[in-house]
Length: 98
Image (cartoon, rainbow, N blue to C red; front, top):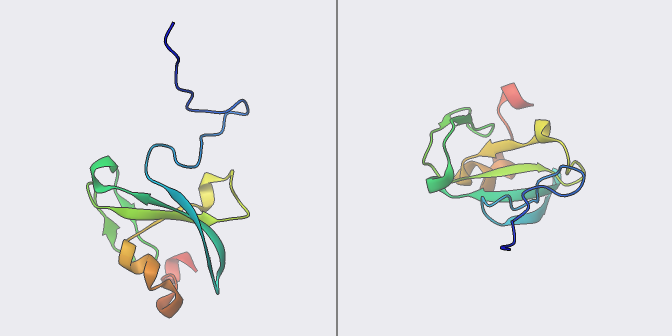
């Protein structure tokens, strides 16, 4: 019998990679973050970047970041443009996300 790939662990959590790119830990003045790259070909929804408050349209590669101490909560995950994520130490999030 062929093996089935499991998309959730025994507690119902999805693995960090989730098939959407490699997850990594980044440290900065604003704390430690889990960051996952999302290839443009795998994006289907529109998001709003907290760095520039502009839309991230479907098909645009970007990153998803959330506090490293909050692995299980999807509510703290934010989708950022790659450039906005890299510049967050100079600009920070827009007023809406502060």
